Length: 97
Image (tube, rainbow, N blue to C red; front, side):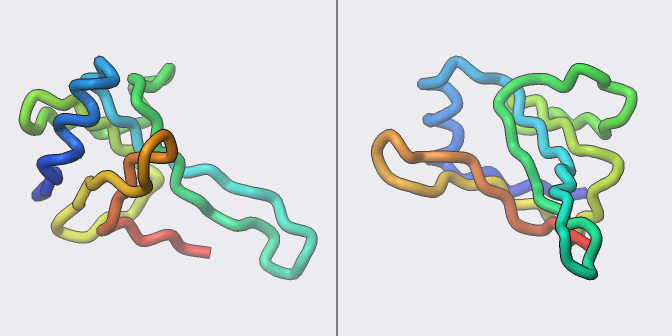
């Protein structure tokens, strides 16, 4: 698996003092016929149950990727938002209903 980390992401993580990025699957219950809505949850801490994750070290950052997420060949992590509303985003993850 390949990773692409944006330059501004690395400086953001350094400012926050974070060395971990966890990508997890969060299922939101729905009252309609879908039953559930999968969403990706990104946090800047290591997971509580590390057995449920694949672990990668990229550029000094520890990436924890949930085994429930389906990914493409390349996972891109980048920074989105402005000012105090900045957050880590990812592309290259396929969420299946």
